[in-house]
Amino acid sequence: GCEFIAARATLIEMLQEQQQQQQQQQLEEQQPQQELRQRRQQTRRAGKATVWVDKCVAGDRELLDTLLGLWGSLKPWKRLKFVWGLLATLVCGISEDDIKSLAEADMVELLLAEFAQEYPEVMRPLLHDRNWVLATTTLQAAQVSAHKDLAPPVVAIVGKGHIPGMVYVLESIVEVFAAAQGTSMVEAGAR
Image 1: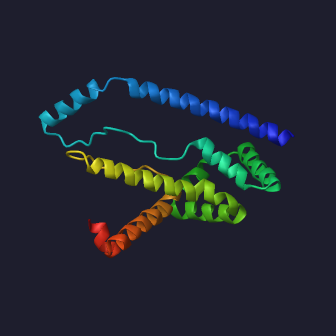
Image 2 (image 1 turned 120 degrees about the vertical axis):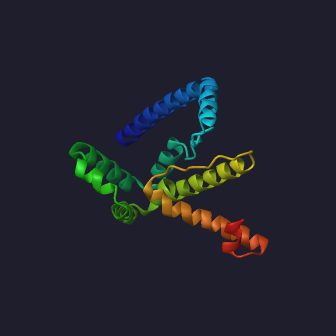
Image 3 (image 1 turned 180 degrees about the vertical axis):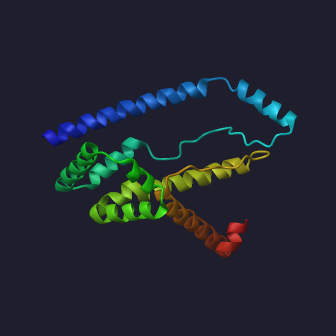
């Protein structure tokens, strides 16, 4: 009873926050692009080398989808344990040294491995599904960009924990493409 009510309240708060973010994004997208065009023209006239961002794409899954998948993957006892762990972390706090240590790639991998051992069932909705979405969205952005004149580069900004999974997904896509074309992965990647 109480667990359901608390989870529902948390989800409602997250939905409201997501709705506010979407409204803010819509407002930002509605602003005229004239100033950006003028700056771009001035920069080109001055001969400066600058990369301009024409479009920013949020390529991750919706937060609510991820949270619902995470919550749905846990059995009731694991849900209680998970929430207790989150509350303990919030109460005890995270030190600045803890945050600095997360910047190290080995620490991120260690934490992910520890988390996967403790909660293996949440790795699919929390990490693996999102790796697939992030990788395929990045690939789609690159394909769209490649069809434009003077295609700008595609830059994906992701958390360190997603990089190995995204590389795996992208390599798998290249292998499938190569197999369908009858070429090796190296030859397909060079295309």
